[in-house]
Structure formats: C-alpha cells, structure tokens
Image 1: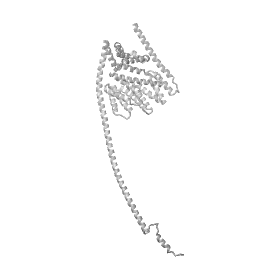
Image 2: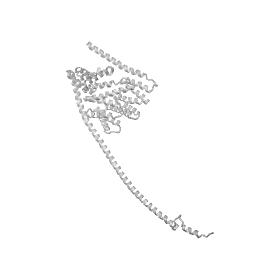
Image 3: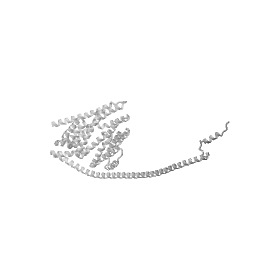
Image 4: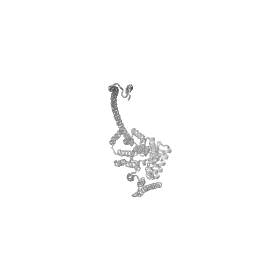
Length: 481
C-alpha cells in the first residue's frame, strides 16, 4: 500500500514537472513575441516569429503562422512563403469548410511562376480535397470519386495536374475503399512522387505517413516498416535543413515518436535489436517532451506494443487495456484488441481474454461487413473505371481516325495541288520552249530583213567599203595643171 502511494506521488510529480515544462515553453514563446518592435526589418521579424512559432503550443500555432505569412507577403519573401504555406495548409486539415485552404491557394498564386509555385499550389489543393472528403456523405464521396477518376484516366501535359488527379483519387479511395484497388493506386502514387519536380519533403512525407497507416491497418508489416523508415530519413533531412536555417526550436520529436510507435506495432518486420532500439528512442523522447511523455506513460500504447513484441505478455495485458481507454480510432482499436487477445491467451488472463474476445469479435464482424460492402463498392468502381478508360480509348480512337481522315484529305489536296502545279509547269515550259523557238525564228527573219534592206539601199555594195581600182583610174585621167 505504501509502495503504491509512493508510485502515485512520483507519477504526480512527473506530471507537474512536464506541465511546468510545457508552460515554460509557451512562456518563452510569449516572451519572444514581446521583443517584436515597429520598424524592424522583415528578415528580423520573421526570424523572431519563426522561433515563436516553433515554441508555441500546437493549438496556438495558427495565429503565429498567419503573422509570418502576412509579414512575408508584404516583404515579398518568397522563400518563407514556400515554407509556410504548406505548413499552414496542414494545420487547416480539420476545417469543415475549405475557406482557409482557398485563401492559402489564392496566396500561392502570387508566388513567382515556376515549379516551386506549382508544387505549393498542388499541396494546398491536395489538403483541400482531404478536408473536403472527410465531411461528405458516402454517396457524395462516391460521386466525387468518379469525377476524379475521370480526370485521372485523361492524362494532361502538366505533371503537377496529373499528380493532383491521382492524389485526389487516392484520398477518396482511402476514405471508402481498403482493398487491392487502393493499394494499386497507392503504389502508382509512390512511383509518380519521384517524378514530380520540386516536390520537396511535403508530398513524400504525407505519402509515406498515409502508406504506413494503411499497411499497418491491413497487416502488411514489412511495407509499413519500410514506409516509416523512409519517413524517418526525411525527418532527419528536415532537421538538418532547419538547423542550417537557424531554426533552433524546430522540433520533429512528435513525428519521430509516432513512427517508432507504429514500427513497434509492426514488430514482425523488425529484428529483436531493432525492437529494443526503437523502444529506447521512444523512452528518450518521452523523457524530454511533455506531449510524448503523456502518451507514453499515461496512454501506455507504446509500452504495450513493446511488451507484446518481446513476449512479456503479462505486462502487455494491463498496458494494452489502458491504451484502449484513450484510443478512439477504429483501426487502432482493432490492432490493440488483436494484440490484447493474443497476449491474454498466452499468459492465461481469462478476464482480459473474455473482454478482448467480446470486443474483437464484434469489431471483426463489423469489419467483415465493411469489407463486403467495400468489395462491392470496389467492383462497382472498377467497372466505372473500365467504362471511363473505354470511353477515353474510344475518344482517342475517334480522334485518331479524324486526324487520319484529315491527314488523308490534306494529302489528297496536296497531291491535287502538285498535279495542277505540274500541269502549269509543263504549260509554262512548253510556252517557254515555244517562245525560244519563235525568238530564234524572229532573229533569223530579222537578219534576213536587215540583209535585204542593205541590198536595196546600197545596191549590193557593202557599206564602209570603196572600189580602189576605180579610184586609181579616175586619178590618171585628171589633166596636169
């Protein structure tokens, strides 16, 4: 009894310590904000606001983020806009209306033309679709999905538009389908991400988070772990990037912790050394981050996964039971119940086994019904996709035939024109030959006429010549003086 009381006191002290640490972080952010002064340069203001943003609690980040956008827009600091527009877009994912996403999209239109602008615009549009799909009815979602599928089967010359078309399909499929079709589109998206210029880290990180969650829910442990390892590599690169930018308070602990925890859930794809490594990393993060500390020590999902992965089933049972009290997401509850059922059965905890079996059986029944509905929906969607593809092929075939017919007409007209030109050339050549012949005849006639005229005028004497003999005879007959 005394031991339990000591434990409770220690837990309370730890909670107070981390609560104070959290308040201290926010207090530091508030103090930094007070250092902003009128007349400050845009660069200095943004540097301070970035630190305030990084230190501010998650629920208060929006206000600071909007300030940064405002200062950057007025100062035409495009690098900051490239960085902050996607971050703010992610903050607005839970908004029921797309108003804020639309404002961010409008702001992104003011960026200089180029791939960076296209990437930012595309990212905001993807987030707008994510937010939109979460609040549509199943019928509305299916109708919108068919619209996006139609766009996807009609490739454009712009890779960003093709990427957006495919990503929208993946988003909507993920909200209503969980079968093979979704995986096919997910793998297509992964291949396309590598082809998108200036994609940065925003698209890949979002994709690998989506992929890791999907593969975890559906039992693809190796694929899930591979996605999380990719995600952690990107987080490492981002930490280096922001450190170079002077962002000393930029923190990715929360994202790393989620990846480590998810990999422990997929322990089948890890070696024993990796299990120990990732659990130790979770402990280290919990000891320095208040938010992670609460998840680790109060919600106990991570310890529950670790105990189960290492065969410590008696310890896993109470940890997993505690985790279930705090988890609302259906897929996560299903994962935890499956592990609790196996752990309780292994250690002979009948009450926990009965509880787990009852809830797990109900969820399994619901899942089977859901899978049946999803399978029917997938068949219908595949049928619609085939129709769209057939319509596109038919349209392309008709267009091709029309182009061929048009080309044939052009060729026919060209041949006719060539024939007419050949006839004209032959006529001109004949006329030219006739003119040359006539010219020759005229020249000969001219020479004949010229000769005849000379004969008539000079009586046979060639002009310019004299009869010398006659001259000499005349001179002899002249009398001497």
